[in-house]
Image (cartoon, rainbow, N blue to C red; front, side):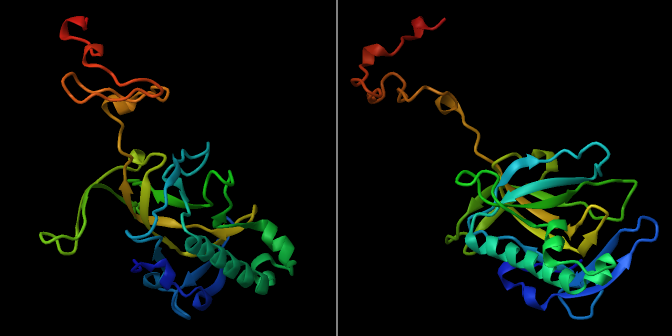
Length: 268
C-alpha cells in the first residue's frame, strides 16, 4: 500500500494519469492516477492525510451512511466537513486537475470530443459546496470499506477511537495518545475525524465519472456525552448547587438561599 503524505505536500500538477482501461464485462472505464510518472504500481497510489492534530479537524457531518437498496453494503459513505480554506482549495484544485485531464483526452475517455461544459456536467466532484451556507462547511465524501469475509479484494478501513490525549510535558516530551480499535458504526454525527485516504484514480460509468476517495485509516474523537445537570434543557436557568455549597444566582432572579434547597426528607 502507498505511504501517506500530508495533503499540503501533494503536488497535484505532477500527478500521472495512465491510459484508459475498459472492463470487458461491465463496459466501465478507469484511469489509474499515480504520484510517480509512468508508474502503475499500487505503492505509488495517491494517498494523503487530510489534516494534522494542530489543524481544525474535519467533522462527520451526517454520520456513516447506509447503502441504498442494491448498493454495495461493504462500502459506506462518510461526509466530512472542510474546516479550513486551505483544505477547500486543495480539493477544488484536484477537481480541476481531473477535469483538465479528461477534457484533454475526451475522445479516449468518451469516444468523442465533448465540450468542457458537457464534461463538467458529467463529473461527480470531490469537493461539495455546503448544503447549508452559513451553517455547514463545504464537504468531501470518503468511503469506508467494511470487512467482507467472502471478498478479500479490498482491505477494510482501520478505525480507532481516541481515549485520551496528553500534550507534550516532562513525562511525555512528544505528547501521548491513548486509543482503541472501534467499529464504523460507532462514528456519530459531529465526531472529529483524522483520516488517511487513497484513490486508484478516475472511474467512468454510464451515469458519469469521478474520483472516489477510500479511507484507509480513521482516528475518531467522540463527542463528550452530557452528564448530570448539563444533560437537561433548563430554558436558560442557571444550575444550583448541592446544599451547603456556595449560593448561585438564578437567571433573572435573586441568589438562592440555603433554605431554597430541598432537604433529604423532601425527596420521594
